[in-house]
Image (cartoon, rainbow, N blue to C red; front, side):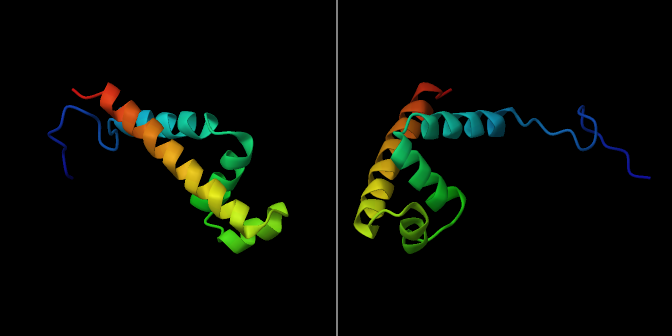
Length: 88
């Protein structure tokens, strides 16, 4: 029998920082315009290729590339700004 010497029960990890990051990411995605949000979710979260997104959304591939580019810029700016707000 292995006894844990930590003050927290076994298997109980402090998930607050990870939950905070998930909330920040969700809020950043929510701040995107609808077309960029859909494209970003399909690209970053679902792992679809630009061609697949173009076909699935019936949007030219150049438009998909532009939406991914602008979404990435906005997400980065929002998340970096959020990170700066929470420096300890």
